Length: 275
Length: 222
Image (cartoon, each protein chain N blue to C red):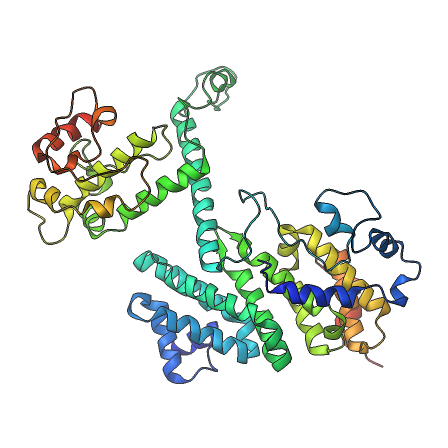
């Protein structure tokens, strides 16, 4: 990135590139530039691109907006962070394309068509008009990135490592085994955060020492501070009293802090909630 | 195996202990101090011209190895931040030693070439790379064959990728090169030759026509 410290260098560029006599001669591109003047006053104000094009060729804008960024990119960032952010965005985009393809394939499974035309293409154009994607998928990049970060926190644990070693994907039973929340499905912020919490609670069953310990023990050991590490809309106060979840569904009625409540109830919730 | 690793990653110029460290980093990154490894690599690439042009490769491999083994990116982060420090100090480096400066440029460009993010070049490096090339295209640098040589080498290697990332800056850079070639009186004839070749190279879509290839790269027999 063109950091502020190139201010000095820019000045040098300007000096070096100020049209000296040779360069002045005849080159219409240079005289065009010089008409603008350093103060820009000889011309009407132009769009941001103009100065870059017309100015002495080495002058570059002090700030820039790339299509990928949300706005003017700060110049004093460290490269390590910047690249990690790029990678996160790129991974999320890649995941989205894959997910879309998977959904489309699920909608339009390859079938052997016994049509006289002999065509083996099962993608009927009528079908694709009906449903581009079953339901909406979450496409907001900031949301996807936030969700992915939360998932990464969960996956970056010994518990998760232990879990995936012990239970291969094809052996996973819904309701019994934790399932990573699907970041592409539309959920409210609250609902999503709840799912993440529940998922992480379940994963604690695979924490290293107390592997055979019941979930009851695990839940009491949870450090809520860790789970609350990432931003949550709703403030969470650790409430030691157990709260009774209603039957109307976890995501709507469950209070943030009810994890400190009776494990049995939480287990019940998990059974009903995890489909 | 031993020698091929040395050759593959061009680490012959390191002392033996450091070579050992690097080899371990390649196989078992979790067991070494990756910050130290990244510093060792950057330090050497500022001193060793051959290594500076090839160091991207070993960096890439260590990054992959670390990601696979521990899912971390300590090495990459440290490497990039150290590189950024060196980049910030480039003007002093250039004043102090042209050799170090051209090594730095080669290294940054090599990193740009090798370290991709999902097969896309790192956007964070695009402007810094251009900054370096623009600096090399200034008249004081063009006087100096070593710097012209570095400039054209980088453009040969990554010019097309850079252009894709930002066409406008590439156009501006080449305007400078054209001007330098035409108007700058204190260029050496080799410097001029190098500039002419790179101008033709880009004009040909980042490749030389057969006749141009013959002109520039054949032995002159009389």
